[in-house]
Image (cartoon, rainbow, N blue to C red):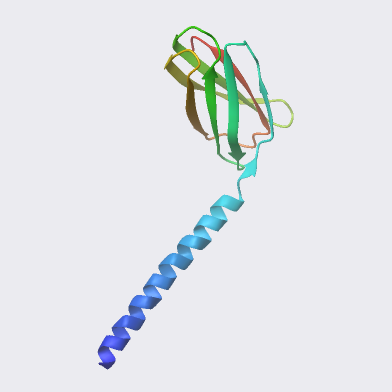
Amino acid sequence: MDRMKTFLMYAVMVIVCYFGSNTLIYAGINTIYEDIANYQFVDNNQFEIKINEAKATSVNGYIKGTVKNNSNLNMKEQYLKIDFFSKRNVNLGTKYIKIENLKAKQTVDFNLDFKLSNVSYYVITTTNKI
C-alpha cells in the first residue's frame, strides 16, 4: 500500500510540474509581445482591410486580419503588400500575402508571421503582381 501511495505522489508531482511549467512558458512568451498600433492602409476602394491583431517583439511578430472585396467584380489574383518600418522610417522588409479567387463582397481571413527586428509601424497596399 505504501508503494502505491509513493507512486501516486510521484504522478501528482509530475502532473503539477507539467502544468506549472506550461503556464509559466505561456505567460513568459505572451508578455514580450507588444501591440503595433501604427499602420497605414493605402486605399484603392476595392478592398476593406481590418486588422484584428498586430504584435511584435524585438525579433519577430505577426499580423492577423480580414480582407473584404468591396467591388462587384471577382478578383482572380491579388496580393497584399506589407512594408515594415522602424521608428526612424527605415524600411525593414516587405512581405506579400496572396489572395486568390476573392468573389464580390466576400471576406477572407489572413495571417502573416514575420521575422524582422524592431518593427514600429507598417503600410499595407494592394497589388496584382509581385
